[in-house]
Image (tube, rainbow, N blue to C red; front, side):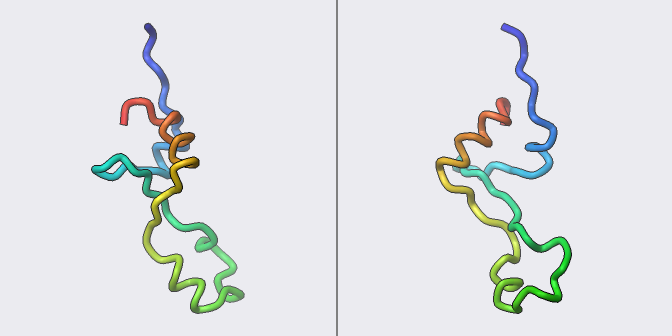
Length: 65
């Protein structure tokens, strides 16, 4: 069998936890932050864990991780 290629965009954006969950950075924090509320900016700090449905798709992009 040939080797599978990893999606380059996925390896830059997602990482896996020790238990196999997919960790991703929160959205809407790049620009136009002056119009976002302080509550929204505070709640989108750090990273989040993807839902199982979305994680299944992302894991198919990262075959060897």
